[in-house]
Amino acid sequence: MAENNQKRPFDVLNSALNKNVLIKLKGETEVRGELASFDVHMNLVIENGEELRNGELKRKLGVVLLRGDTVVFVSPA
Image (cartoon, rainbow, N blue to C red):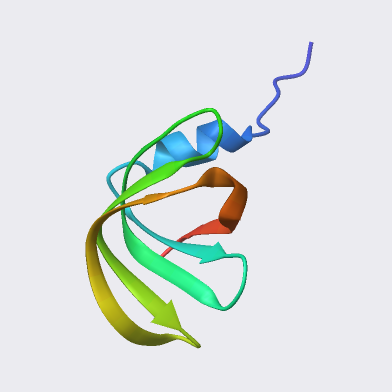
């Protein structure tokens, strides 16, 4: 049997824990910060969060909970 090296979505999120990520939300907003935790609904807790608009820092958020149904993508920052 061939070894399966494919990663599942939760494997990717687990490997991003405690690391900086960039999250694109529905609309024009992006959030950058450290992924502190997540759940099965892809709700994300971000520490040291910053809100970005068009790649520019808009404001610092600190700790923020992002609802999973607003998340478009999560990327290493």
